[in-house]
Image (cartoon, rainbow, N blue to C red; front, side, top):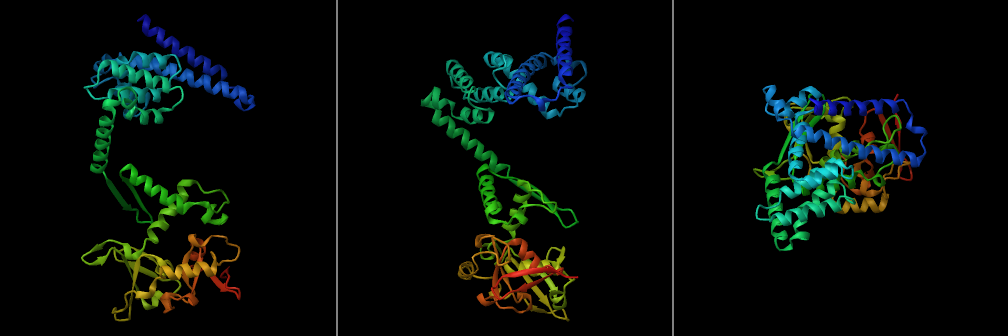
Length: 410
């Protein structure tokens, strides 16, 4: 009973100490004082975490008293924490019982909780054939490295710690770990897409790390501010768009501009979306078009995508007979794109400095109205101005110097 009261009294003292400074405004602290406060609080948090983990490791009877699997389940309910978090804490608490040196470093404040998790995880993951002496050397080595590396770095170091403490088995161990990671990644690949019925599609995916790195690299290249105008990088309120928003826009561009001649084939037909419109819808300003999956888009959007994207416009006559299923020369060739880049240098909208690599190829006389796909009928426009060119609310004027401006229709 006295021990429990001592822990509760400690918690009360901590709460009282926090309450004593809660009214103080840290904004007025000197820079050096803020630095000292941040480091001292981080150290205090480590000490408190170590104390809480010690109690948690010794609290199996709490779960039993309430008919639960363990104390983590009880703590999740009572503290309104996620069960995932409390179970992770319980796993660390039990591991620290077997790694006294790591527990001591955490309790002293020199180690952070996530660093401790990385160290015990790496040591416990060593092959059973590794001797106790080698395990202790690995643990002590990582504790020393913790003074200069965060938890993420320690996890990576832990995968190759045997290269340092036991080179004769390290390479084999690393190869096995990598093979297991790759097999696990390949077995858990998944992607789900759900249309919300309001013009948006939501999704989530899990892919191997190298695939995620490749996709992110591609999208970052497309989202590079150097490829966009200030207007494209800010929202309607003038605030800088967050990276997630810019990556989302880059992903849209990535899909829309995927080379149609490289799309996979099924039964000899490219995996290309077909957009069906009547001739009247194709020519109209306020019409809609039907996609082959049953969803709809505005005819203006369909005309924009027909300039470059991997869609096939299927134009029907009055008797619903196909008039045009996408002419071969609908899309500008690579050579034509190079020529447009040399001529236009970038987006031809006045005041826009988007480079050629960030532009779309646009038909002045719309392809949907039998405009030819040739240099005299083509121009480069950045994604934003390309959308305006197909927006019925705006009128595009071509000037003598081949630049264009837009005026909102009244």
